[in-house]
Length: 504
Image (tube, rainbow, N blue to C red; front, side, top):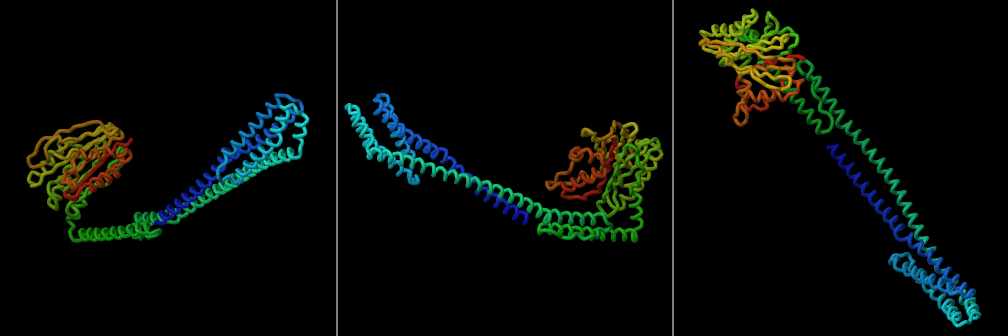
């Protein structure tokens, strides 16, 4: 929440500063445009007006002194141009002209007064051939006074326009300086805001997260998981810490109950405990070129009717067994112990898997239970895998390039009816993995009542990255997590999974 509030406040400040910058830029641009589009042309026009009026006076003097018609034409052109420039100035000025309109009117009226007092009578006298009288007329005090008034008015107009332009330029420069200062301030504020944001992120989020992570790691690593998880940081992270602590306490409670139940089982039911120990797979010596792992979970109590085994073969390689006795509970476990012993003895002796299936069938000749099982022989030195499947769910073989196949059934299930079994083989190259399991994995149903099929299990495996597929422990963990997440009725049956990967 604090982070959101800080982020919202920072965003509001940035938006406000952006608006200020936009206003400053708009004003500065407006002033510059006014200077460029209006004041500068007006200043040039007023300068041309003063020059044309002076040229008109000079052309009139030349006409009087030299009596040249060309000088008269020059006078008329320049005084006409001056009149046109006054009209342009009049049109260019708006209502808010800073008093310039009155100066234009004054320049126009003084020009008319000069023309009426000096040029008009002088030209009339020259055309009448009275040159001397024309010379006296142009030099009268009244003529000079009107000329001086005209030039003074034009110069005043030019100076006023220049003053207005200078004020506009100074205003634009001021706005530009303000804009620059504002940009610097905005940059400093943004940098300060970012620094404050990262400092707040460090203090409010990262440090509490690091503390929470350290507590969780300590609670996970230590025996008994007794280190409490401290709720620290902002309310949201404190709630996560509280939930994690509640979860830790619940796990510790369940571990204590399981430990008590196991101790009671060992103390009060030594036979069941012995059966559980007998069905547990012994540690397997490392097999060069092969990694494997297995998991077995009971649906009722702590003894399962499923089991898996891994037995070194005399000729090299390893034999993997996954079997499932019909039914649950102690009776099924007794059968499992008996058949497991028969199959282990045969595999340690190097017998053919088909012969071992026949021996197992003899072992249940007087038993009401039947057994499904698969024996998988893996010889990494020859990159070959062989299997004998007695009515068991097919094991799934996934190659390094994610091609999937199955180790299908090669004979009937193991029962008092006996039967015949065969052995099949195929390549098992580096990067390949084989996964065998009991029906408890695929008989779980989702919320719609649909069972998980072997094809879905194959999709789960093929969807894992190569480092996960080639790590049997991680493969089994993730596969069980995906199946349990899908299942609405987990623990319907015993679940056993074995995975073996050919290392590269």
